[in-house]
Image (cartoon, rainbow, N blue to C red; front, side, top):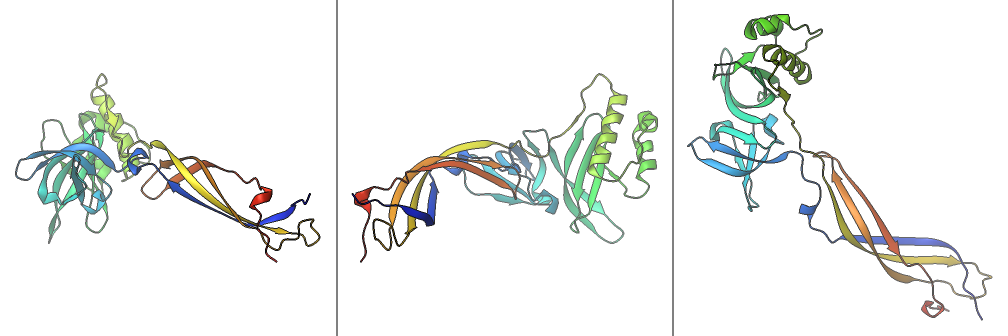
Length: 265
């Protein structure tokens, strides 16, 4: 009986199609459930996309809608997302111009910390003080002296080496000041990103093999091709807006039967 002994596989192409809808996979970490109050006073619930907030763009989508509405600071009185992040429009003025930007919560407590970005991309920070509805701009220059005056006795008592004008450093400082001002009250740094989520889906695959055969093989064929069906599972983890990790297992039956061989003379 003739035997077929392939030397090696020279071609193996696998095509995989995901059979699970995208909404069962990891969610975009910039999208949250929440609501906003419009400039006209309406309260609207749905999803808020904070991905472009540093460009002073807030996106909103109603429940069961596929359409995103693009909002500017002049369209919003206030927005709140499920993690506790609050977003407000804020006017900033310079010697010659003024502009409206979005600011969002970094630290929530008796003394709150907010961050916003100018149209040029520069980060600005604002302090919310007890009994004061308006936010106070923290100046990039001389901010340490300004904070000691704004944050009362605890602003002067808290020791913080190498305080910098950035989100991480100022957030830690405000947390310490709030703990000093009200030790029995919970103070928290607000989560700015959603938690990564996993999803699992089914997949189907098709493999095409074309092994080469030695010339002195018992079965003198020049070529052999076959297609095989397979299946498996796959998963995706959405880590950030630009990074998604895929992993999966696929099974393909590669057994070669004698009657599937096609001889080409």
